[in-house]
Image (cartoon, rainbow, N blue to C red; front, top):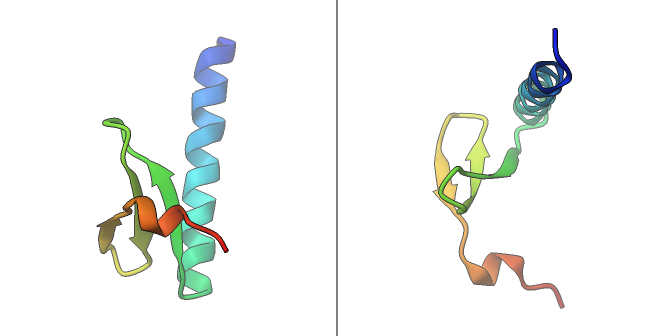
Length: 58
């Protein structure tokens, strides 16, 4: 297999593991969609688009 394919497979496995951890800890994962939006995906399958206020830290 080529490196690009192997890297894609590793990224997918990492995302799958993150979803399992989120479910076990009753939390969510954050990722960037193909259209460039950041979203929170909860363990129950709910997906919420994040806005600029979600990125503010004080």
